[in-house]
Image 1 (cartoon, rainbow, N blue to C red):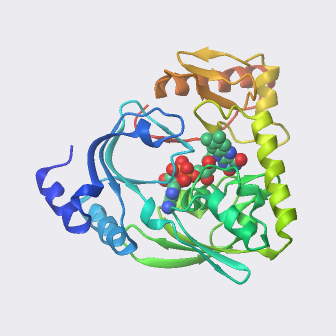
Image 2 (cartoon, rainbow, N blue to C red):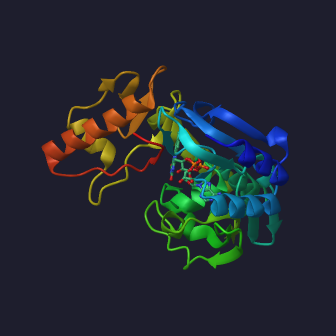
Length: 304
Ligand SMILES: Cc1cc2nc3c(=O)[nH]c(=O)nc-3n(C[C@H](O)[C@H](O)[C@H](O)COP(=O)(O)OP(=O)(O)OC[C@H]3O[C@@H](n4cnc5c(N)ncnc54)[C@H](O)[C@@H]3O)c2cc1C
């Protein structure tokens, strides 16, 4: 619950039309599930974000940064606090020689397209990842042997008091689907990529090839959050799940995709609880069959 005093204070930082109360998060996640957030704010600019973060921190109101919601499982009970989305106002992508500076709300696919148009190679892997730059940095998103770690030169972040810092690649501590942002609650506002000159046609062909492979192998026709589990060392999550006989296994409207067992999909009327239960059931069965504990890649938000 957001008190009247807090509601009034929020409007000092953000125009009222960008503040939504009891906002269904199912509208903002690619799984298409999730209950209401007490408050959902579309951030207009970095100054507003810094002031708001400092205020929320001071009054002790929990807040969570959302990108494109493509790696999130939000509880059916929603989120008791404030969701901050760096959307439309954080879309700028600037090309400076072999570098691209992109704001955190820009889609990775747009950065990849811009790189291609400017004859810059390195971002091809990101063309089909449906996340934002901020989410991609936080997750060290990657595909087809590419990952953010290889192309990020530096990242501009705000801390929870609203202070601005610039972190270089090493300080970001990128690892497999993780970064320093997982342990330190920074807000990514901008990222500088360092790319290599390349041939536009070759870059475009590589991106098209990756897209074709995704369409062929992944259940893109259903809502999901991509690969549900991280790749366990020495194995592939999808293969373990298939070999455990779990292809097509359903709980409510959640299903282990038959097209790609590494994806849990929403077949239409799944709840977050269905998906969470199916994740648990897959973990148990794979552990029982092969002694491998699958770790979710998906980020959980709210009470399960
Ligand atoms: C069909 C499909 C295919 C996918 N394929 C891939 C793939 O090939 N490779 C891959 O790595 N992922 C893949 N994903 C998962 C997802 O797209 C990535 O993890 C992506 O990087 C998440 O970005 P997002 O903006 O959607 O983040 P969200 O899902 O909104 O958030 C994810 C995490 O990042 C944090 N975050 C978001 N923005 C910021 C910010 N500005 N500052 C600080 N923290 C922030 C959130 O708080 C949250 O903890 C796929 C998902 C789908 C649905």
